[in-house]
Image 1: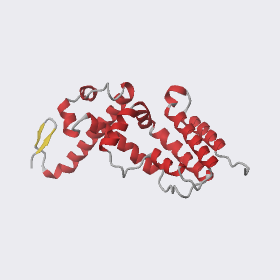
Image 2: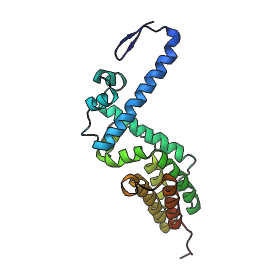
Image 3: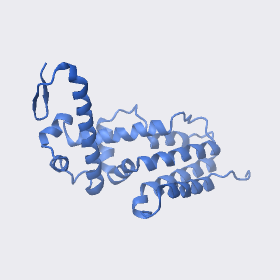
Image 4: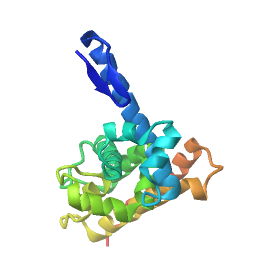
Length: 210
């Protein structure tokens, strides 16, 4: 069986189809990784498929073999964020939340963000483009970090001051870590994680009853 590749026919036998698929997946991930770099460095709107292809050493035709458009690449990167969000926040019950539970979740989120910082930087720097594509094409069943916390923070059964403190703690974590490359470039990852964790815990310490 002959399989068409981005650059022409591939005469490898059918028994090699697993290797071919693995190579295609690897190429697809490389495209996404380079697109993530360029979208973050110069912005989504200012990045062309030609620039992505040139950095990879590909032709534009090779990019089109894997993605129909630049918008498809951005959507795929956004879905990476959703996958991360579901993993980092698995087990959250928006109807059963406390300050102690929020501190545990934010501890886990801090470690995860530092491991996926580039995705959060992309989201922050290309908010308009991502929001537009999200409205047009994204499956609403996918929940990300923001939407999950919105459910928690809108739970009217929780005290307002606790919800406000959770929101402040989340904002402190996201702001410090997403912008860390600009604000704290010389701070080691482990030290930064510890400092941000301490700050979020300060915001979530139990207070005396009103």
